[in-house]
Length: 391
Image 1 (cartoon, rainbow, N blue to C red):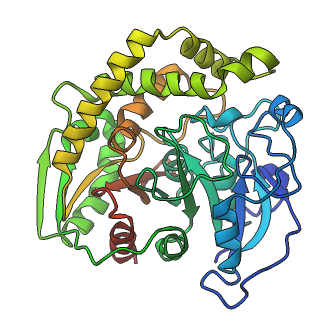
Image 2: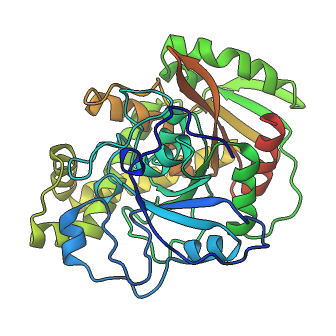
Image 3: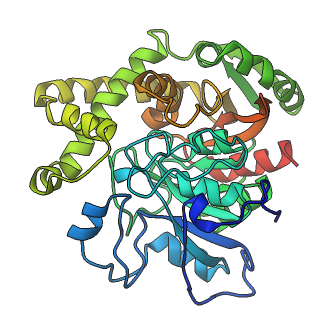
């Protein structure tokens, strides 16, 4: 499935803690494929750290494996290690102040993206074939784009989150990263429920989403867009958010932050953990959101969800840049970087829709991803489409 693209094979440098797990299902679909799992998935007999030593210290060892881990192992995947996560999975950077920043093999000196940073780094370095992670605000999609990988955020609720440390349950999904579209689809055959045949025939380019990307990024994506557009019955362009994607991102931020506080606020206040200042700032922001404000924002989020779903129906695929730019240099990402990312990643999050990102261009020899969003439950069809377009 490919070798380390940088010649660097040190697992620790790529946020990988090796494990010795018995192989299962040797003749099954994923036979021989190496699996790494983000440090939010329970593994029987081990504590789950959620990227933070104080979380590790204050939680017992897991009684059983997360369901998706069992499913992948029984399908033949060889579990080779656990990977670094941003703390509580509440970041899109991939810089963990306790365990270090996993290297980005495709863009040295730049962040790998978070919070599934170690999963992305281990796959991009050729140390694994499947990186299992989570995606709430873009934590599969962003590192996939930054590291030149394929990644999927499934339809919300379609893949089990049993045995996974939550962040914001109304947006949390389990996703995965691979170096090729075929492997991405193979994992989907294991984790996704059966679905009837569905044809995705009409492509819609989201002009407001492309406007969020740097001009160089738009130019870099043009050749890939021209190639994949030939595979669709129709190609159109439209604005998705008449009130602006920045406004959608702001609503998403309030709703997600409130959910984070509802999930982890009591632990945070009780433990007073050592945590990255940027994440601590977001948690404190979440603690100050009033009940009235979050109720209002949740009502608006429901209206946005209806609007998005009305524009992505059977046979229709939305197309957009995965991220506004290539990976920032280590230490250079700031709140503005996050806001720009959320303007793009909030679309699938608010809509509860499946999104696949694929490598589609590069700038300064750094990879950059293009995304396809499908109707709810079209995950298998979207995976098949991606495998055809990037064969």
